[in-house]
Length: 216
Image (cartoon, rainbow, N blue to C red; front, side, top):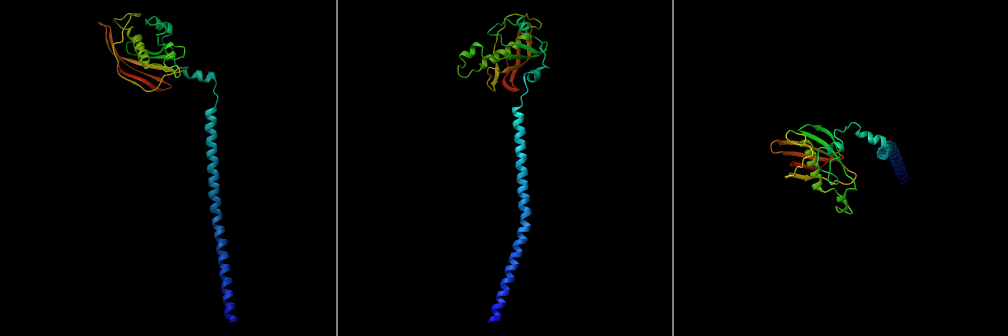
């Protein structure tokens, strides 16, 4: 019995040694994996922080007035406000083209309208949220078309012309004080005998389409 008990005790001791050895081996193998994952997580976290810092720095970068003003340095004025006043019969507060920056005689033009809170329609449209009326956006496009047409054969600069209609008008975004409305029109038909024209137009603010007119 004593020998049997001794043998059992020896086997138990051997089992404990084997388990202890296996546990140590597992710990030895698992540790590099855990450390590797932890290192990867830390590396990913630092990369994310670096990207966030870069985005924040980009958003808060102060460029200054000269750099921002220089963004339009390549845009040259073709017709000034004084030139436009010699062609169009409109006057304040209804002259809605401030300058023309591109012009192809008898074909198309690009004009600019600077939108400011000083314009009288903003008093009532609307007091708490000033928005340039959509009809005035279309009117501004029609005036730009008039600058082209009143310099074509059979027309006389300064003559009064009338808006006969508009089709396919769509407004895409509000135009508000502080915006620069950049307009483009193209003459699609001109009847010199009767002084009748058809045109298409569109206008943008900050590069986004604000209004489009299929036919006017």
